[in-house]
Length: 319
Image 1 (spheres, rainbow, N blue to C red):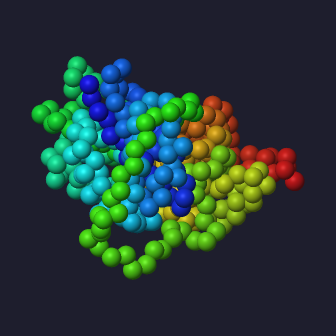
Image 2 (image 1 turned 180 degrees about the horizontal axis):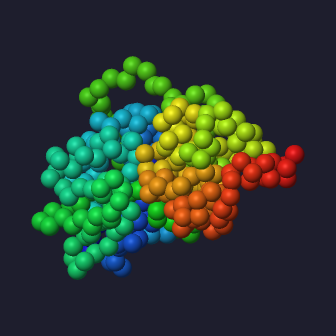
């Protein structure tokens, strides 16, 4: 029997969707007699127990700490304590800024097998094999961890489909309010501007790429997106040029748009890095003048033509 320890994440009073996806990832590996334990950590950890009570979870540990906000020092200490108690063979964390703040240190101190941004999991006999990208996202790399008693992995968002089936796992409470931080936070600064949108939570995106040619053309696509009630996003060249903020960039070096249901790509050729952030979207519409553009390989609907003519035609349907 193996024990899987999963660490949930929450932010601003809400459970992050990736937490349920990590549970789904564990289901790819677990056998009938294995045990899946989910830990949720924070001053109000108990608030997230109900949302984590889904099929595939055997036990939830609500760990009360003295910190409202995420603190890597506290998380590292708490997870270390849980690992000493549970002795898990596999530890799964969300691939996020928060987890990356303590995961590597945790793995080094414990001499665990370690890999980040994992999007594939399987067993080869008794050996765990994790798949992630390599060589600038150009190849799939399969990693195994010979001789490691425990393997710690961070799971890429929007890869494993979260279950909606509820369950009634065992719930226990741990009081670790005595654990303090080694650092002092002087100020908490919100990411992005006051009017910034979290593109990982929206369901309709219109994204622009190098095909718009110049910054002056951004505005007309912004207007079209507003008319269609879509969120305007972009590929990396647009963000690197400063035409749209980095927070609107979709892709490996931007954001994975996990909640998107409809993605309209205007003038985006479709690099591997960009498609890593949106290829999972159920309905992708690609508009490009190049019939050989890579974006068409993943699009449900494709239009070969001038994006400005298509933009004008679409606009006429909303005016």
